[in-house]
Image: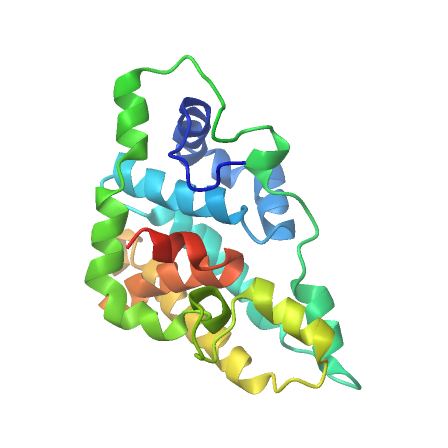
Length: 224
């Protein structure tokens, strides 16, 4: 599968309807929770398409990632012997990527105008968001994803390391998750009429951090 290929017409068509409200359907939300969002290609593709098609208005992703990060924070409430092993079980994916399961990929076709396809593929909005907020999200990047010695871990690599070392110190990763959660919840709240304008750059950057933590950072970093 050509993971770095542009979104196909089929993928753009699906995401167009997805951001219109499909994300709020109970069964869709359940599948997104089980899979911790979408696969890396489709998770970043959805974020980029929504930024492009809604001109940077990212309320849907804010709702989704506030929900997922709250679930992650609850998962860290483990106790007893070998808490790392229990946490690994709580954080592993229990479902498939929604779009992959439906057969959407780089070669998917659809009866959709070329104008909308190009609009959905436009990466300028998401790149502007990443660049503008980079100093606020950069410290949360998974060292394994980035090929660096940085200590943060995304969910995928944290689960892998916990399986190899269930005695791994959980506190730094717990603190990271709780910090992202606090900021992304404030960003989500800022879309309410009475809370508009209350978000900070750190809150907006937490959406990037949440997407990277849930699905991995490689595709996000590649956009830069």
